[in-house]
Amino acid sequence: MKLYVCEKHTDLAMEKLIDEYETAPLLEKLTENQQLSTACEYCENKPAYLVANIHSSTK
Ligand SMILES: [Zn+2]
Image (cartoon, rainbow, N blue to C red; front, side, top):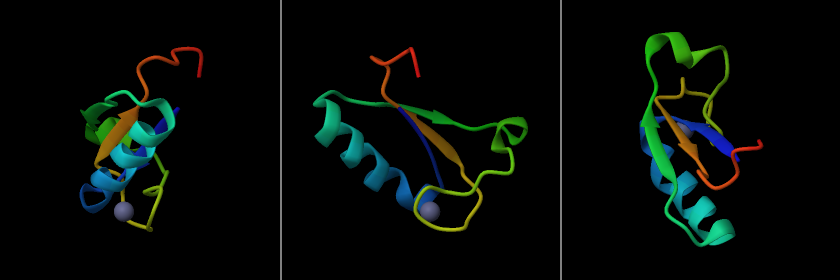
């Protein structure tokens, strides 16, 4: 599972992944190249971070 989030919403995304997988997620700062056309998962800002569940490498 991967969530793209802006700086304000990293906490929400981390809590969501911790709730679902009971493990600390990976927080990765996006480079400009990675900022794609996607918006933040929780608002319409550009995403600044990728929050991922490192134990589901299949997705
Ligand atoms: Zn946001």
